[in-house]
Structures are given as C-alpha cells and as structure tokens.
Image 1 (cartoon, rainbow, N blue to C red):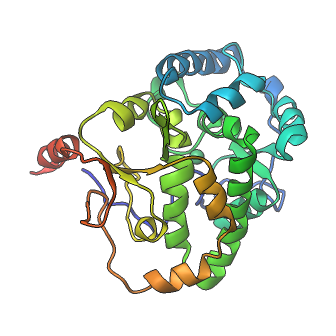
Image 2 (image 1 turned 180 degrees about the vertical axis):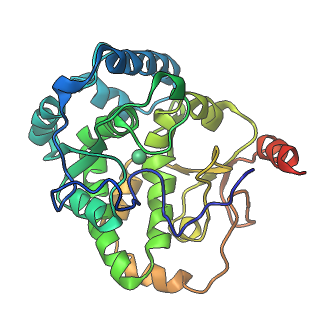
Image 3 (image 1 turned 60 degrees about the vertical axis):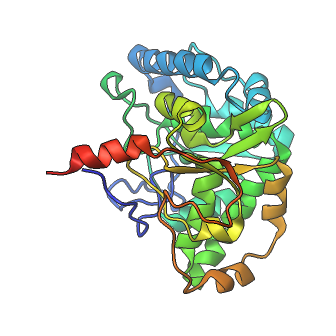
Length: 301
Ligand SMILES: [Fe+2]
C-alpha cells in the first residue's frame, strides 16, 4: 500500500536514523574498509554504474557530467573515499566520510556544515538493484559526489548543514527537509538544451531518471522557496511533482538568504499534497497524474 510521506522521519537519504547501528565514534564515522569489498560487491557497483551511465546520457545536468568526469569514479570498482576526498578537497574543500547507514539529523547536518559528505560504505545486494531502504555507496557516491565538485552546489549543501542545525532549534526541520528533498535529492534544472537532472535521488535511480524527465505523469513546476516549504513529498515512490530551477545560481541564492523570516511567513499556512498544482505555480509541464492514480487504484481493497 502507498504510504503518505511521513515527515517526522524526514527522509531516507541520510536524514534520520535509529541507534541500532551507532558506531563508537561520536560523529558516526567509520573506516570505509575498501579492502573488504568482495568481487560481488564490485560487480553490483559495475552493473549499476553501467546502467546509470547509459541512462543519464542527455539526462544529467552539465555540472553532474563534468564532476563525474573529473573524479576517480568508474565502472570497475567501488570508489575509494580517500581518493575522492583528495580531489574534492583541492577543488571545493569537501571530503567523503564513511558511515554505516543513516545517521541522526544533528550528526548529518554537522558533517555537511563542515564540508564532510557522509556516505554509506555498504552496497546493496544483487537482488536489491532497484530497491534501497537506506542510502548505500552507489546512491551517495554516484548520485551526490559529482555535484560536490561544483562550487555552487558545494556551498549550497554546506549552507544546508548550517541551516539544518538552526532549523532544528527553531522546530522547523520539516520545512527545511522539503527544500533539501526537492533540490539536492529530486531537483531538475532547466538548461538551454532542455530539462536535466541534478537531484541525487533521481540520478542514482534507473527508473526515476526516466520517469522524472520523460513520463507525462508528474508535474514539473518552477521552484519557489515558500511553495516548496509547504509541499509534502513521497518517500515511498516516484515524486508526483518535481521542482525546476532556472540555473545553478538559483541554489547559490538559496545558500545566502536567511530562512528564518521565510519560516515565519509559512508557519501555520496550509500544506500542499505532493500532486497539487496551484493557480500561482509557474508550470513547466502539467502532469497527467496517471502513474500515481493507477497505483492508488491498485492499492484499494
Ligand atoms: Fe541522498
């Protein structure tokens, strides 16, 4: 059955965790243990890498393609975080640190605020290629790390970490999580040559990288900060609406504005369901809703 996004546990992409897997270190980091990956692990990586590289040709945004091309990320093996960090550090001051899976919000934000990207060190099993409960090394490294080479996105994600710590204190984390969700995880960007993917949740998913761009079902709406803060999202299926930025500089602007007055403005206003299209929306393409309608029908007793 379909489940409405539960925004008390903010997301499946590094934003929430239980204590079960807590490692000894306070910041939840562990050694990547690159030497311990098996041939089967590298094989899963290769399958995913090759499939996704094929699918993303003409679909991923320029910044993603450029970042990927400059990093030691290839088909043959799971990347070594030390080698990624060396190059990232020189370019944008970021590094990749290994964690056992989802980490608590404050740990996650603290890493981002200090330009450390926490990545799951494990990889999904061969029978789980299209199903992922927690972000693994493929989602985190293939999906997120190429964009950390881009100075604008590097700043934006750090600002998100700083903003996350503050939003927690203000009790408005649900609002900020939606901004992260609809940008870093599921964002689209309008390039001169067409709509492109920059969200890691899309870029690392074979099915959603086609659905988000090519399927007539979802809405594609221009990004608007207040609107997005009021919009619930799906954690259990494809998104019903994607938000489109005009260019990467829109993220740069978001990294520099003070969210506090915006939180105040949206506080107490009605929230929007993931499929809502408003009269005030700037619509890039209005979805038919057919995909989710069929899923809802199938879920009825
Ligand atoms: Fe993610």
